Length: 193
Ligand code: SF4
Image: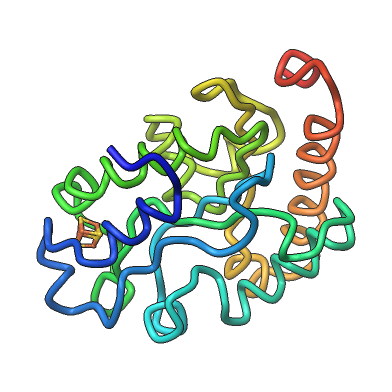
């Protein structure tokens, strides 16, 4: 068991627990502030992330950073970003259940060391995975959920907002305002459920 996120990232960087180790360029562990109370969790690294070694660095990441700055007032160095799985699935397919199972010890330790106050899940896959439900993001978003001592707020994946335009953009902004309210309140999830 690693005692720091830095040590955990170093250990994960050489991971070969699942076949994605053979096709990735590098393990994509996280980006941002390891002391942050706010963490965003997406599905899996894409091509840009696999090449650069950080999650959400392409157009989706730029939109995420912009919306967080505008709605929460935090710049990209003030929050933390990670994915449910640390290596890019070929062709950006969904991670397979056995890959998620293999990667979950990294994920679980990362969240345990991070101990965030607010978790924002980005998109269908991450939200369904963390809430262990088959309901879709459209049904799940719009409220907050208790999750491992934190408050979980689901929202759309920024890639879906880039495709969908005005309505999902407005809904994602509203979700970020909801996250801000919990982040700066002392009551946590009870304030919003
Ligand atoms: S996806 Fe996770 S379990 Fe699979 S090789 Fe990468 S770090 Fe290891």
